[in-house]
Amino acid sequence: MLKQVTAQQIRNLDDIAINKYKIDSLFLMENAGKAVADEVARILINKKTKKVAIVCGKGNNGGDGFVAARYLLNQGFEVKNFLLGKVKEITSDAYANLNMLLNLGQKISEIPDIKTFNRYKKDIRDCQIVVDAIFGVGLKGEPGGPAKAVINFLNRSKKKVVSVDVPSGLDATTGIPLGACVTADRTVTFTLAKKGFFMNKGPKFIGKLKIVDIGIPKHLVRAA
Image 1 (cartoon, rainbow, N blue to C red):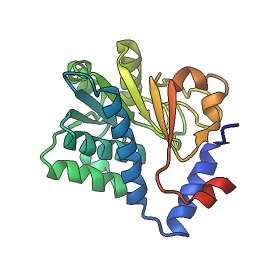
Image 2: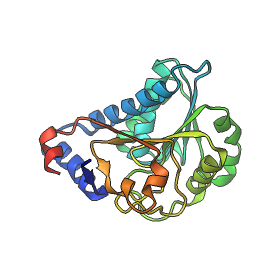
Image 3: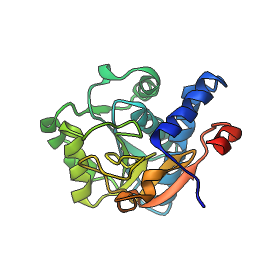
Image 4: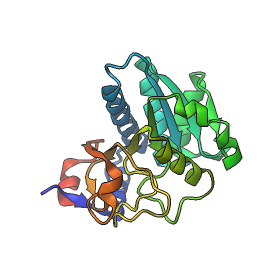
């Protein structure tokens, strides 16, 4: 049987790896983002045009998205980067990876409100794939504002969506959508599958599931 964990259990694993075993959180984010980029590249391998929209939240899930953008750029993809907020609001590991994109001359389209989002709908429609890097396992409460608008837009647009770790808006433990929730074509999740992927409405939202190793020590994973 496929091993499954709650959102809290996976957060605990990350904390132990970072704080006890001194595995750099930037290293884990790098591996996570690269895995997402590799999956997107596999999907588009035989496509003539390779345009990807990456929609990032302000937390670590968004940081994974910034890493994915960098790897896709290195592979020759046309990448459009969107941030649900403002650059000045991003901190820590996510900011480090956002800053790398800025240093590479990449444009980050800020979406602080719904009105601004309306200006970028066409840009997203023009892409073959959208990477959903809005919310991860730490989401609490219903997505609102531009996040809700983006999620609803993605679902209506029928764009192919790859979700980072968990479809944004899904409770990773219970499988209950917390209001608006991305319906992904595939979900690239990290370390272990989440219980919510197989409970309640979870299976409806995750699409094809891919579980990837991002560098958490194996003995911690086995003990989870």
